[in-house]
Image (cartoon, rainbow, N blue to C red; front, side):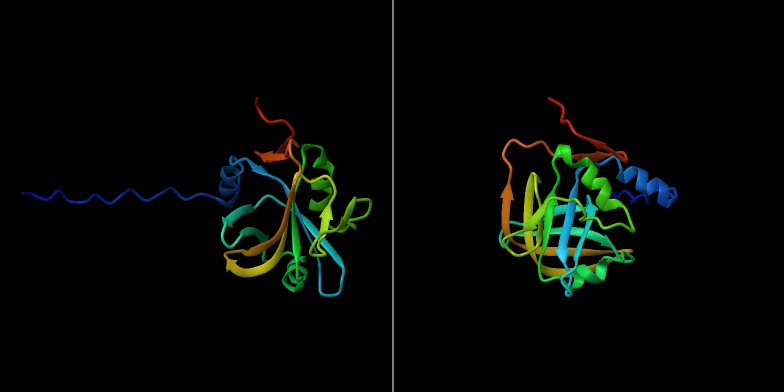
Length: 172
């Protein structure tokens, strides 16, 4: 019996950060606004599409935030936060919560949720969480939350993000 030598794969071509970002943009995602109150009671919130389920038992979800984000200390001190999955008609809210230097909550319809975290009216789903774990990962922090309460709007269409653009209608 003769052994065939294992061939070493050719080295991958290097890629730029912009190429990496563009390739990631080919993955269609839902759009969320993550909201909380910091340890001083101030409202904080931002648009994010880095949301995923982790575990059904216990119920865990995750989202990612830049380690350079000015909102990070607020989320680190929050006792609860809400992940608001946006509806197709909430594009303007997604854009508003992505802007810097404004009061993102001004004119935004919201109410305190079951845990006290700010919940945005009209979201297709809301996951109210207690912080479970924060994991540094490269230039981001992965925030894992234990879901304490969930609600959803049956039949509501989600807001989708793909290729740096929003979409409000799913193919039939």
